[in-house]
Length: 306
Image 1 (cartoon, helix red, strand yellow):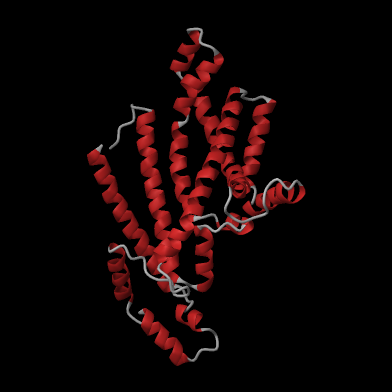
Image 2: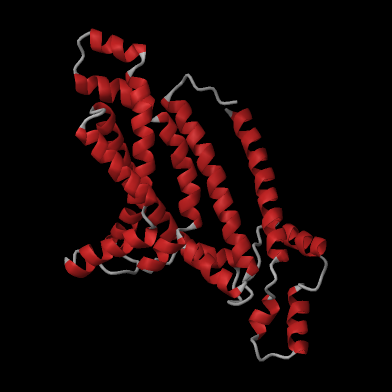
């Protein structure tokens, strides 16, 4: 295990280095001028040039990247061009909201998706199976803002069960989590159904049935634990996706997460924030995949960590 973790950490460091380089190159090639954005449209060319020099934007690419990388290795993500605040502080202020939404959304999509997948597999080719697959297809295809607005209209405006937007209480997280959960549940339902159908045809399931075990015990004791392994890998990916922020959902519900911070930074060409959020998202994806591999190992000892 120690050797595996060491190797994965080294791989993660190389991946993050590559992500930082590619992102830096792309932002360097963006035609928008951060100095002009900061100075304003009415600023003189001299003012813009002074700002560009202060930020080091007039230096060659390799110097800019080396300065950024050196600071990054020291734990310094830089300072926002616009807000004049450390990136670590800005991201740290948004991190609790993003973590809360991530946990709630994953819980929602798993609860809905796995239930739909198991029921559809057990009732294969029935009207229930077909109906659930139609619902899962709608979940996969539906635009985020449409689902979010519908939930807001029904449960916040018409019924008044939940607040229209904001952040601070458990009630605020329900609708954005359900929005993301409904969208993700479609993928989980389809994958769980496929995995369950494969497991239900395995010899050990037929043996369990031949021994006279009840249907519920065969399904939940033998089939589900083996069918859930592909789902664990998807959860690892979702951790990174949700940590990077779902901009549309956060905008609809006024959720103060990292995605909203990134969108504001893109509009202002605030490169340090964009870099910081990208690295946080990449780190979350790497850690999520590592966690998924470790959990899979403990769920199924036949899996070897290499």
